[in-house]
Image (cartoon, rainbow, N blue to C red; front, top):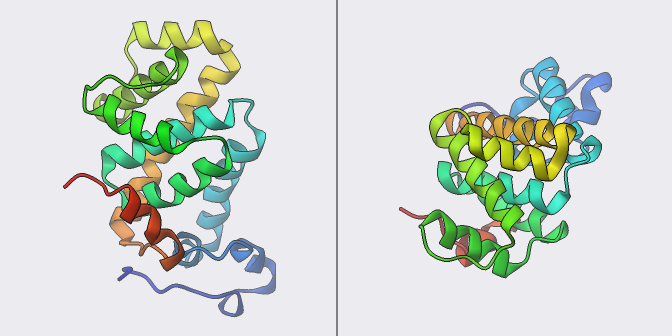
Length: 182
């Protein structure tokens, strides 16, 4: 049960009702502070729609954050979204395997993205070697976008956990198929 009420469009001023055009639980909670919700959505929107980072790599990075944080909401939402952006079931299993230190059937760039994501998520920053490899492969603009994506989703999983946001029923099958480690 969330720690703040889930609001509906009818609870908001007309100027803020667009914040619930996608009425997921996270947004229904965040609109308790419409200005914060709008700022949050601004960066999230850039990551999804404005970044030049490959969408599949973006989703792998977000999934890695969700897996490491053991965030049911983030994980379930981005397994579904990942499928929409080219992440296969084999990719999801490979992420799980790679995180566990097992061989993973992913290309070198995807593995490097996962490694960089683990470093930021666990240690607060990528190592110099990982950053240099990603910078060489992606260029400056995309390595910045990747870093922003990973860092933003590290914050998102903390918001989700603190507010105790509930996973919507439509996303539960993704948790059942790919349960988080205990």
